[in-house]
Each structure stands twice: as structure tokens, then as C-alpha cells.
Length: 277
Image (cartoon, rainbow, N blue to C red):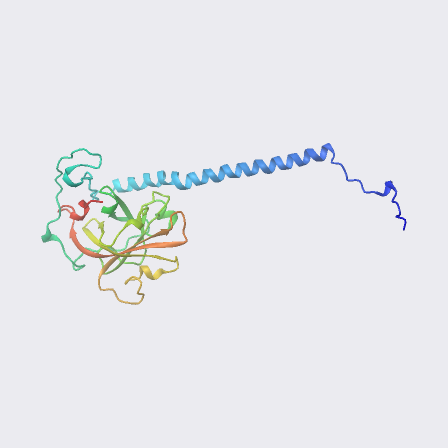
């Protein structure tokens, strides 16, 4: 059978791009590339700002707030290891630090000078954590609003939970990354560690009793009796909360503790503050 031939004039001929259309395409691709590069630079600058510059700004503010508290008593002692040798290998002189006499320690919440819950942003206490170093001291302010408290002042107190030394649950929150990250090492705390809270009138020494990782919706962790909503509290406890894992808000890292004793201020430091980190 003969194959019918098709006139060459009927064959489709691909259209050739004109110089003008090529220039338009090149301009479009160039513009898209510039936008992507600019977006990458902006994103990189945001990460730097979020992870580092917020630490500088918030750290400066928190240090200033601490310095302005007349009653705060930061402990300044060298990190002495066994034998009086510092971590740097230098022999350190003996340091005399007055500690609270046992006769002034009250091993219950009875008679504790509990302050009333203040207005949001009011700084009313400091937190010392010996495991994080002798020089670790951060302010505690009322509220857990990010913009007004956690991002600026550091550690915040959950409104409606107990105040330091009171029967119930003194619940506090802090960032683990960014904004001076007061709870950066929350996952290093161990059962038996000391958490020392100071107000103008008293020292409150708590002992860590447990840790947990929970979902953000598990608000029972800050109930008057932690994890047992509806139960009436009989002891003074503390709860620390922060995001976990680092650089994520997917879950919450929880540290619980109970009051070991309280003592009035002005009579030396709790001996727990001198524990080796």
C-alpha cells in the first residue's frame, strides 16, 4: 500500500524564541533568584537575632533588674574543688561565707512570711540553682506573658499558683533558648538537687523530687498538688516548666520539688548555695 506523503508546508515547525522573549525570561528568573537570596539573608539574620541578640538584650535587662533589687543577696564564691584547688588549677584562699544557723531554719511551711501575689511584671523573688553554678541567680516576676515577662524579665510565676513558701504549688516558667534562656539547663537537674528562692523576707530551700516531659496541654503539672488536680495540698512545692526539646515548643520539661525549710533573711546564706555544681 502506498504511503500518502504530507506536503512539507503542512509539517509543524517549532516556534523559535525571539530575543525579546528570552530577555523577559532572563529578567523573571533573575528577579526570582534575587528574591530567594534576599529571603535567605533575611531568614539568616532573623535566626541570629532570635538566638543571639535577644540573649544580649534580655540579659542586659534582667541584670539591671537584679542590680536594682536592694534585698537580693547574690552569692559570689570561687568554684573550689577538693583540696582547695580551683578548676583552673590555681590554689584558692579560704572563703568565709556566713551560713544560716540551724536554729533559724523552719522545716515546714509553718509561719513562713508568704507575700501576696503582686501585679503582672512585678519582680518579687530570685532563684538560685547550685547545680548551675554559684553565680547563677535570676529574678522571678509575676506572670507568664511572653511579651511582658518571659521575653524581657526572665522567669515568670504562673498567676493563681502558690507564692514562695506557701502550701500549694509555686509554679514558674522560663525560656530554654533565646531571651537570656534562664532554664537552658533544666534537663540537667537531678533528684536531690537544691532550688533556692529568696524574697525580701525569707529564703526558701526546695529539693528536687522528680522530672517529666509532658504535652503543652497537660496543665495538671502546675495544680496545687502537682499532677493531681482537685486534691487539697498539704505541703509547699515548686514546679519549673520550660519547652523541650531545645529549639522546639513541641513539649514541656517539668521539674518538681518540695520545700525543705525556710529561714528569715539577714542571717547568712543557705548552706545549699555553697554546694559544688
